[in-house]
Image (cartoon, rainbow, N blue to C red; front, side, top):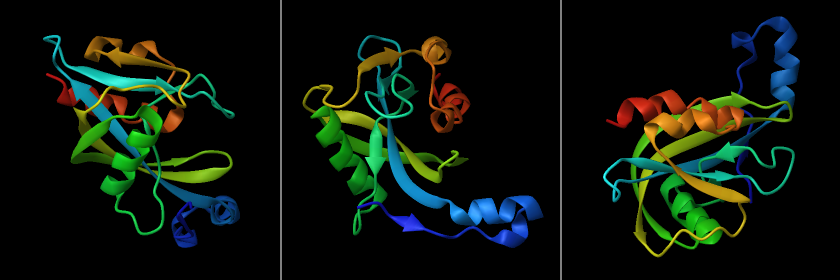
Length: 156
């Protein structure tokens, strides 16, 4: 079940955008910035969508928060469902607020590490471990792109 909220304040928007913003649903999701440094260099795990309008574009794995779940619980569940591994969820990096044409996305992005199991693709079309220098080599979804500079600043 998708958590939907209508919490946009019209007074904060220019007159011509108020009706458009109020008609959009907010979809709350979580994303895992899974990192690894076993090869001597810090790397970040990214996946390419295997379905929908944004098929083939890159993103940080995750998904929708279900009713009654905390963002951290949702993230552990989504990664287990989509990638078969169990993750340890770390700190919240940032919450991205992004307006897609059809909806408003509110995405809580957490650092994470693989705790057990292997990352096996069940829904994504492809995956890569990216170093800091490789983060700009893939075609990110617009909301995920907003996180790249923050991640680069954290990878030393």
